[in-house]
Amino acid sequence: MDGAKAEAILKKALGFSRADESEVFIGGGSYSLTRFANSIIHQNVNETRYQLSVRSVFGKKTGRAVTNRFSDDDLASIVKKSEAVARVQPDIPELLPVPGPQSYQRVEAFDAETASFSPDARAEAVKKAVEICKKSGFQAAGYFSTACGSIGSYGEISPLAIANSNGLFAHHCGTEASFSITAMADDSSGWAQATSWKVSDIDAVELASVAVEKAKRSRNPRAIEPGKYTVILEPAAVAELLGYMAWVGFGALQVQEHRSFMSDKIGQPLFGPNVTIYDDVYNDLLRGRPFDYEGVPVRKVAIAENGVIKGPIYDRMTAAKENRQSTGHGLPVPNTLGPQSASVVMDAAKPVTLAELQSAADNCILVTRFWYVNVVDPMKVILTGMTRDGTFLIEKGKIASGIRNFRFNQNVIELLNNIKAMSAPIRSGMCVVPGLLVTEFNFSSGTEF
Image (cartoon, rainbow, N blue to C red):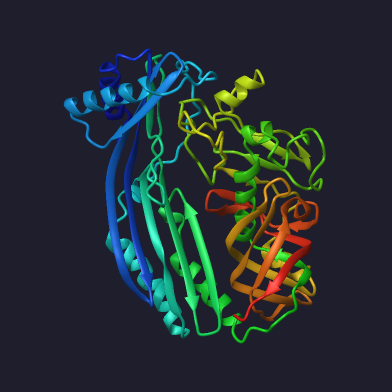
């Protein structure tokens, strides 16, 4: 949906409002998915849908209602429902007036080829990838998805355009493509994945070749005793850990309530001097939406620079508590989560290639990715989870064998103090991170697979 059409719908909805203030956003678009398993396509779906969210404010009371129907009568009805909800809510003493017009940094994130990528084109890419797996004796499983607009991978909808009764309007429409493949045999598996705003950046054949090579090298995995090891974490594994760290600790509400790792640590060195982390929606590999759920412009925020904690991200309510400006990381008002990060970027000082990371290591373990990750202690950022789809023993700079998977129990703060080398950052999901060579990584138990 282009900006003009979205603005017309939002203005019409605002016109029906009788509240003190109103905020409306429209989200949605199209999401297409081709999923394959046992080396055949078994699911091919496309959804195109839009959703209008209306928030009404009376004094310090606010309420929200949502619809996916946009006729005049439907818009009038949903505004009326929102106002009815707002009137019976308790006061929120810290509720702020809706913001006025804002200026936004333009983010070029729309690719016409991605927006119109056909089911046949996805199927053809899947076919080529599956054939590579089958030629090597592996079963293939995975997916190829494309999206245009603001529907997420799990069906969630975020703002495509937002407006309010104080004259604010913002619109952003991006595209995204993601391909994931797992090559599987009886006692081994290998995995590769890529995500980009342009489908032309996705090379399914190359990704299948990587997955097959990992599966080949994982055959007949050896059992290794758990313990603390030097590890090479590929970017997907790093992204999993930093994504959880951001979820439990990057928000100002978590800091203000003293349940973040950075509570009482701002301005202090907490990580190694080679660690710099940002929340940066404008990173060239991410190209995210430049405004939040209240229409506030998103800023690039330094979380840590050269190991020193610089501070959290803010929404308007948490910023007001400290007499600061929001960094544009707000969720729909009201909410109990506070500001949330969705664009973690980790710099790499003096990066080398992943191959060079491997060749520089001896008697260490290479981890392709993690799964089943959970938080053990949010204040210390202790996480637990499993290795998956390519865990290897490295001897004298080369892969010596595949090894059975481990469960890990790792303090991420300690990990960020034990980094010896990094590769160049790449995109993995909604993170842009390097691969890491890390000492003292704690594998707490082994597995039988």
